[in-house]
Image (cartoon, rainbow, N blue to C red):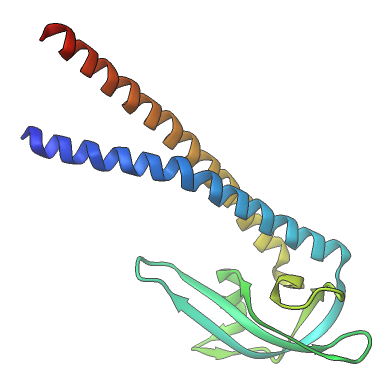
Amino acid sequence: MSGIVGWITGKIKWLLLIAAIGGPVLAFFSWQDGERVRKIAAQGIEAQASVEGATRTKRRRGGTSYSVDLAWKDTAGKDRTAEKISVSTQFANRIISNDKLTVDSLKIKYLPDEPGKDAVIIADDAAKQADQDSEMIYVGGGAGAIGIVGSALFFLLGRRRQESEEQTA
């Protein structure tokens, strides 16, 4: 019985350590992406982009993400493209029906001096993307706090138990 308890305790320690490290990392990257979305929304140039394709990615442990491939002409008339632009599930449900795209084009905002997908957002989905990033900041911060406090408690309790065993021996 104590072997099972020790095994479970060891797994909990590792989970808390992963949360202590992974939570703040998740919060940081979510904050960084939220800042990117806000910058493009505020400073980006609006354009109409044709939707070249959409991708649904199902993960092994559940969850599905969606992205679209876009093409448009910038203000100078130059052809531009961006692949795998993430969209929220709610937005994907609006533009995809029965595995078929229901739109030919979308209103976007882009930064003219920056190439690639990190300089493009879909205007109608920007608010939802920023909301998701804000939620993930809280999730990451909460996971980090729980991981740090839990790891500290396990460390202190484990140390006290070792000290009391040494004193009785």
